[in-house]
Length: 185
Image (cartoon, rainbow, N blue to C red; front, side):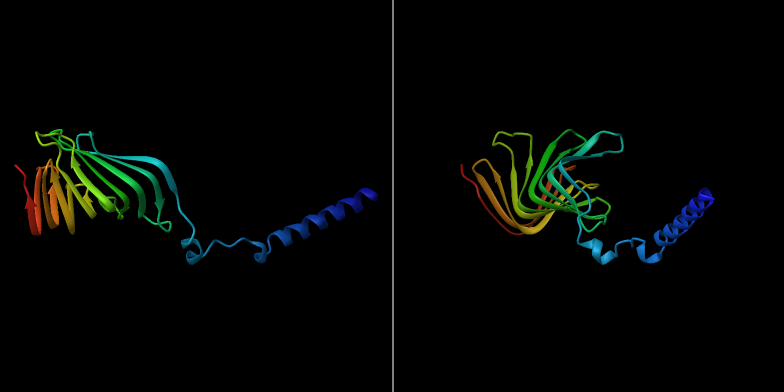
């Protein structure tokens, strides 16, 4: 008899606990999109991202001290960035900046804050260095461009302009406007 009462109490307790735990008021809700937007997504520290050309050779190596995903989306923000590009004819270039924003699809990298574009091959005057506040880099076309003021230095020579388009594959630079230079003998 005691066994039957104990079994009956156990079944009743099981039924009651199942009902309490399955109550919709106790079910945790998924976070609403507006609540989740303020929380960080993934982040990386001291990260290296590599892009490969059609032949499988590394063409772009992007290094950042810190990378943050923006609002759980497809955009990322990078801090203290360095992008090393090797052209098909083995000409090496480097672009550095304090911050970068990678647009969805990963094809455009917008750099800002003390941006510097520099060829790594030294000529008789040393490497040419392009400085600007902002610059966009098109990964698939290997074109760095800006609408901002730029300063190009090559040894003792300097050139100032507003706007620039540099095709790293073809080794060409086009200055947009307000071009002025200073060339010392």
